[in-house]
Image 1: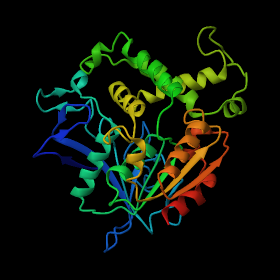
Image 2: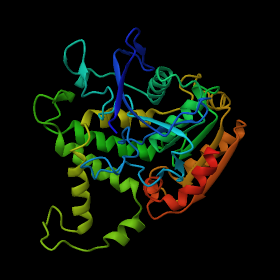
Image 3: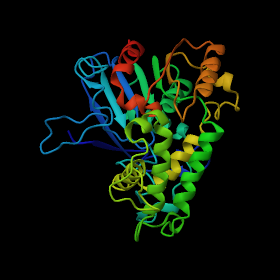
Image 4: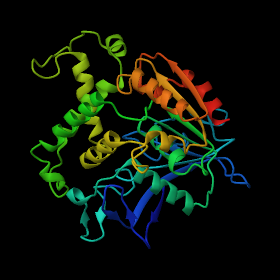
Length: 362
């Protein structure tokens, strides 16, 4: 099932929260299941930082062994039940998997945006998702669900469009990014911008900053998993032919593989813009930076799921988010548990998340 695409903001430009405008925005999206006659069963799926519009790929797709990033969660009778709900998932604004981002052609110059791509926020991303649903003539969402970066989008949907969202399911995402997490993102971005091929972001006609992007991905991987999982998988095992200052241990070889693999599917400029949007996220940016004013707008029933040993969205930040939501009167269901997979648990541990997703969508 081919990914669909639609061009939005053809008449008027999108005014961005931090200044600047974008026009002729292409959005890649995919749908699953059937929209009922009342249009009451639509569920928006918001992907994580480096995701795309395909959480699920039909197994019978000719010649394809590719799987979606939520492949084991979706399907008839599963937690994301395609017999019951109509799912929409789009690649975010600023991405590089079919939606307008830094690698897209700037209609004003007929060249990739590169360094000319404007700063974006999660609020801007949500505004584009809303424009997509308007184009699809879906006036109301049964639910918005997302993990990590997607969980922030789900929260902002409930804040900005309270009358259009009945339920929010936020997996492994706090209301704010911590100072430590911002620090990790800073180091990752520095690896990219100091790569000799970066060229201020205008590298599309020449070599891409692959070394910097690979290093950024390796560091990111260390925040997605736990020390427990890495020790179980690799311990201190060495490679058969170790490189003294390179891949000496198997865990190093694993990280190098993940960094190299990432180059085939992601753009360095998109990584820069989306990680900064993650850092900047504040639900109250449009509401005089008053977090309680912003959260008090939420009418949706809100499910928040935390992994207690998440290395990225840590337990104290999740507890603070829980407290803020409760203090502003949000109807909150909170769940917390441990997982060796840490932050990545919401992508891989179906058995742990199944009941909470089902309940959150009811």
